[in-house]
Length: 327
Image 1 (cartoon, helix red, strand yellow):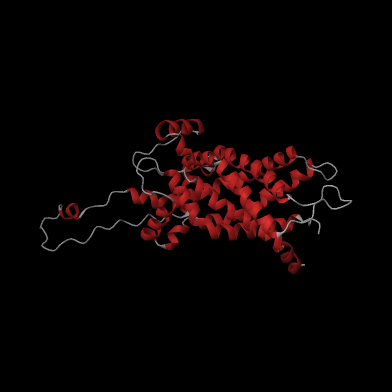
Image 2 (image 1 turned 30 degrees about the vertical axis):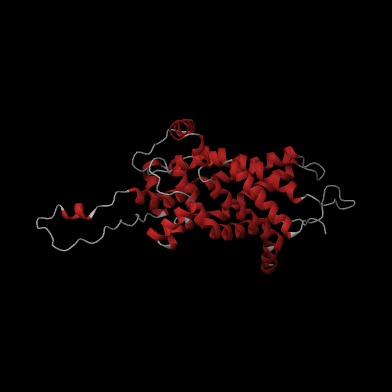
């Protein structure tokens, strides 16, 4: 069976569905990634599992989904822009139905550039909400002795055990309003350069790598040039997971820089940065090269299922089925 041609509207529906399902499945790991990348001095979390366990204990199960509403709201337009842009660029760069490797790379570059319009404010808001619990965990807890000291009359009853105050419940709306008031529209696009620096290389690696992995072992359809037989589900799924993992790990250092630049609230003794170069220099000087790979495992575990799910949605033809029902 030949590789099926998917219309642009169907691609947009597939991308939106894949984004919503994928974000819901892997968001807790993404939250752990953000908190691990932001750790500088005080090591609140020892790793991904420790971070998730402490988050559930202090903030409840739904604490692992802080910031998910922003992602779920904006992931559909983000995927729509990325897929539409990649589709347009691939068509423009194709000659006689053939797209060379350099064309695949340029198409991915264009798609990564266009999606930054939505990605930057989405991640800006998401990071503030995700990191609130880590900042709260760093605040010193008042001991029973400190709690009893200011009182005029000493109590004969043992004071209750100290409890940590719950993390402040900021909302995406309040953060957006505050940023627009104090910094204007540019406040929502803080770290846009770093986001671009991460997403463009990611797309340049992912799209060509997936296309080549997905075509391995498939023969060209007779009389149809470069059109290949359709890959089986397991091949598309594994190709999406593999290409996503490789691209995610490759750009992790850039993701660390982006996360640090977009985090507005800093813990005690943590650095603030003036830009990409200053952030890179300070991380290298104070934390060493290994700091640029913080959250790499989490990032791979987030991205691989996202793109595996995306390929599953495409394979099942969710977009085409939805358009069929609407038609």
